[in-house]
Structures are given as C-alpha cells and as structure tokens.
Image 1: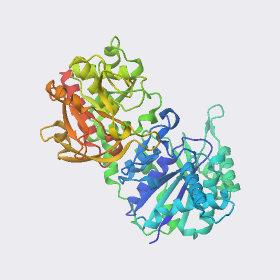
Image 2 (image 1 turned 180 degrees about the horizontal axis):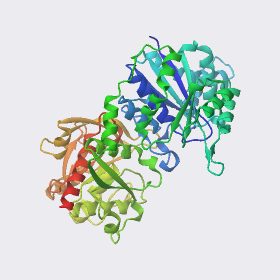
Image 3 (image 1 turned 135 degrees about the horizontal axis):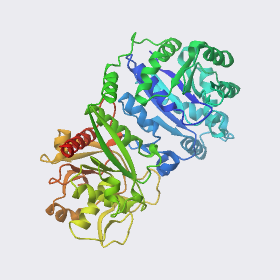
Image 4 (image 1 turned 60 degrees about the horizontal axis):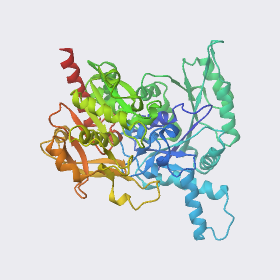
Length: 539
C-alpha cells in the first residue's frame, strides 16, 4: 500500500487544538494497525522556534536527532509513542532558506524565482518527504496558523495543488473550526464555520471532514446546516466537545467515527476496530486515582501553561502510573524569597524546579531548592533546575555565597556552572546548543540506577552551560554526588544527595520522552516519592 496523505487545517481562531486532532486521528489509525507519522508546517519566518521566548510560542520541543521544533511534536510523540525528527517540522523560514540557497547555486537556471511554483514546489517536496521513505502508510500534515492568515497562503496553495495532483483516494483534508455558543441567545452559531470553510474554498481547497470544537453537543439540525453550507455530508461533520483531558479526544473521535470516515475516503486496508485497550487503561487510572499529591512547579514562565507543556503532561503520565492524582501548583520563581518560601511551598509533597534561560527568577529557584533540601521534600531539578541545585549546595553547604552560573554572572569568583568549551567559540544562537539525544552512564549504587534499572541511558538535551567539574570533589565530599556522566566527554548529567529522601537533578530533559504508553521513570519515581512524603505527613 502506497502512502496516503491527510492535511489538517484550522479556521475561525487559533488554539482550537489542531495538534490534538492530528494526534488523535493518527492514534486511531495506528490502533487499527497502520504505520502513521505526523508533521507540522508552521508559517512563521523563524527557521525554528529555538530562539523564541516561551511567552511567544510556548515550549520548544527537542527531537531525538536534535531539532528544535514546535510543541505539537510533543503531542505527536506522546500519543503515538513513536519518535519524530527534524523532518517532521518545517517552517516558512526553512522553505525560503532552502529556495534562496538553490537560487544562489544557480539551480533555477536563471529563472525568476516566485512563490508559485518555486516556494510551493519546495513545500510540496517537504510534505511528501516522509511518505517517500516507504516507512509509513499515512502521513498527517498539520498546517499551522488559521485559514485567512497571509503567511499561511503558500501552505494552503501547496495543499490545494496536492489535492489536485493526487488521486482522490490518496488525499484527505480535515478542517478544524469553532461553533461558538452565545450565552445571551442561548444557541450555537454556525456562521463563523461557514465563513471559515468558504475562505478555504476560495483558496481552492475543499475539506472532506469538518471537526467542530464546541462547548455543547451539536444537534442533527446544526450538523445538517454545516454540511449544507460547506458542501459535505452530515456524517462528515464531527463534534469535538470540550473534554476534561486531551487524552479523551481519541475516544471521542471513535464515537464520531472519524477513523471510519478517513479509512473509507482513503481506501485504507486496516483492522475492523481500533485496539485502544492500553489507552483506556491509562484513562481509567487517570480518572480513578487512589492517591493524591501536591507538587510545586517552580518556573519563570508559569503564566503560560504551554511553556512547560511536556513537564505537565509527564506529571500526568507519572501520576496515572501510580494511580495518583497530581495537583500541580505553578509557582513563579520571581515571587519566591527566603521570607515567603514557607508560605509559597509549605504543604507541597514535591518540588520540581523547571528549565529556563536568563537571570529573572534565578534567586527564587535557588531558594526553592534550599527549602526542598532542608525540609526533606522530594526534589526534582531539570536542566537549569539541576544547575541551581548545584549553585544552592555550593552556597549553603560548601560556604561559597558568591557561587553562580556564568550565564548570569560572567565574573563570578565561584563558577560552579560554566559555559561548555565547545560553546565558547560560537556567535550564532539558533540551533547551536547541545541538542538531541546523548548517552549517560549511571553509577550502579545511585538513585538514578535504581529508577532506570540500567547502567546506560540516552536522554535529550538543550543547553549551553554545564556543571564545572573543578568543584566536583568538594561537592561530593560534602554530600552532593555526580551519579550520571556522558561516557565521551565526562559531562555531569545527574547529581543526587543520597542522604536526602529524594533529591535528583538532571542536565537533560526527561519530559521530552514521556508518553502515555511509556511514562518516564523519573517522573513515575518522583510522584511515588511525593506520595510517600504525603503518607508520612498524614501519619
């Protein structure tokens, strides 16, 4: 069976959940025995989101092969339990970069380079790249932005051309839109959806399925109205009602028969029913917990949940694995001081200090680490969180009050965290950090080894600074030990305090590899430690 293509577009407003619909569709097809992958095409001119502020774009997701990508790739991996790569995320910046490079090389033989055909041809080439590997039965492409956006037009045009070039049974278009509820009129309104689809049609693209985000159930009358004005069948109007969890969406789509419609349209040979037993078991544990804990997520971007999306989802996975409800309390590190830390973090069963860049909120993170260490509260530090754990220990245990990372204070007399050697010569910021998966060897007598149950692991990274090994002997002598190191460079990847009930900091980003079917062991163990702390306090 040759590769089929599904395109997911969005209308009316952003943040409707194209990524979740794409991931849910993929999950259902995968559960029917098909090989599926998802890719995201973003219309912004940045080559990748690596240099974007999290307030601008949410978290920057990092793939196994070291690509800095859109956060939706995290949804794809969490739903499918399959790795993505740099080929799964393409931006306008990458498209134009490639076309301009070819023009400079003389590839176009002196022709005038234009949006059509040169830009759209490059978009189509990228859209079909994964399909041509022969590894997938279905490639789902999510188009970022909203139909009508100027920057999205080349992508929509490329999809139009592919819909025209491919056989009808090889291409399907899903359009996600909004059916708003007007409380004053007490009714759902279809006009925004009609306008959105009409704009799509004006660009030459006809949706095969319309998925309607809604707060209330759609009546048959509303479905018929949408179908009539949008030129599709009533059964091709799919209801996507607000759910308690994004992980309920695949089951909701089964009820709406989205997978059946797609299989019929693309003439796919698939199992009669999707096998979602593991998925439903996960949901059963998620919604019927036997325990409950309170965990503080200490970070500097907590106003925007998408900034820590993978961490929040990993805590959900770790909670379900322990049949435990994890109540996450987002605490802004900028607001934590030695005077109010007990007020901010008292009553927490676990403290997670999140990654980040820059000076803002640094002292609050250090104070949070100190509180967790001194009060014997389970602690988990990720990337900058691990680095601040080292800074805190150097200050308050080793007696170096000026200890700091050179990222914040280049002239600190005690640089316990310093810029990596191979980073000191770099001047370009984009795509130059230590990115992607690297090996780590674990001390056999460590907490990390107990958690992973292996000696060698591989985790994803995104950083420029590292622990300064010159200070390691003193740290270890006073109780903070390095229990994980890169076998090639000796870079410290994991630090622990064995005398503490649960204190672990990691230089890498374990949240990037946690999925529904394979929750990350560090998050599972951290939640378990928080449960044990809760039981101790309760007694």
